[in-house]
Amino acid sequence: MRSSIAIPLRRTAVAVALASVCLATPLTAHADEAPPTTATNSGQDLDLDLDLDKATVLDLQRAMDGKRMTSEQLTQAYLRRIHRLNPRLGAVVTVNPDAIALARRSDTARRSGKARGPLEGIPVLLKDNMDTADRQPTTAGSTAMLTARPAKDAFLVRRLREAGAVILGKANMTQWANFRSSAAIAGWSSTGGQTHNPYVLDRSPCGSSSGSAAAAAAGLAAVTIGTDTGGSIVCPASMTSTVGVKPTLGLVSRTGIVPITARHDSPGPIARNTTDAALTLLAIYGPDPADADSAQSAGKLPADYRTVLKRDALRGKRIGVWRKGHIGIDPDIDRVFEATVKKLRDLGATVVEGADVLTDDKAVGEHLYPAVLTEFKHDLNAYLAATPGEHPKDLTALIAYNKRHAKIELAKFNQDIFEMADKTTGDLSDPAYREHRDIVTTAARRSIDDTLAKHRLDAIVTPTELPAPKVDYQGGKENAFVNSSSSTSAAGYPHITVPAGYAKGGLPLGVSFIGTRFADAKLLGYAYAYEQATQVRRAPRYLPTLP
Image (cartoon, rainbow, N blue to C red):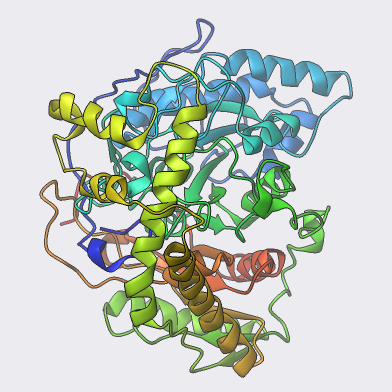
């Protein structure tokens, strides 16, 4: 299973359940929403020459500016897609009952010449660990949080609203962001059931931003937001042929998001193309007084996305190739990655071999897990204690809740990580903890920065992840996997994955662009140039299985 954070204990096979979706928090529909329509794979949801499988945010904005459609019509179209496709996907756990009202408000603003920002009228789905001060729950996939009532929006949700976005609903996720059990099932939660990969339904969507990635791939919203602690954006994006952006730590505030650890957690966009991902990242990033790590984010992205997204962004750049540990595992990865390297050369990049990011595995293996367990207990307890509503107020009470509701919460896997974290006795001022954290972060940053400096690189490219394996409620056997995210996660450095090709049967494969701290804008440019030159992404076909 792809870990939310790369730790030796949790390197089991990607294990995802194949079952009908059971929504403990049912999809709710506004009274004015159109009823579900007959199932179809077509992206044509409006009486317009507009395909929601292919349309970018810019296309949608042009259509609304040109009065060819309204935000209300667009929101209705996405709601119909959710009602039609979500029973097969389990990607969306709740629909915002106020979505249509928000869309109408956006249309009024546009008509009066008071459009608020680049996402005006654009429907967005949030991972279900992001607070919204509305009629939607924020559960992190647990029934324990169904009655939590966040007092205000998460900082990034407020930024989305300020940019004009329509909050369409919440996406399913691996419960507690994949940090409850070493045998957790990617994409399963007690509130949302199982998320399925839209390309082949009995294949894994990876996690923990499973629903966000599957929803983006299936066109259930224009863009979605996920969170990444150790691959939880880039792995599901790779397995669903979407663009996933794990930003530099602190570039996007974590305030109001159910945490694992503030030393790794990074929210970011998942979209069908780099343009939409860039526009969304520009809308949600920036300093937040409540998140100390965001203090230095001001000005780290340009005001105009057009200064970043250039087709010739790779020309003259030195791009390192990371092969060790990632090539020779799967023949389809090898084939697609060789084509990627050739394309980079064709686009004018100087390709530098031997740019393998080699982290000190001993240092990480001995120190990462103790550090993260301490951080998790501290950060989750603080979140639970500060969140209004009837719910467990600390980790100890949450463990007890799960035991009392074991038929629901513990039906598929245990809570051994919760129990280990609850037994930790140190806090964030403990010298032993500080040593663990310093060793891990220093080793991870050095592994990337030294590689960049040694070869005078602008970025590093590597395969993101294996093709999606079959679903397996039982957990399966340990598998090798492409661990492209462990160093960037521990370092707090940016990591962007973009569709690169397909394995046998049409399973998606992604390629990763990695750089140093606050290299986000440059990486977006490289990803865009590669994407525009290759145009490999194709819409999912929702195959039940492979031959």
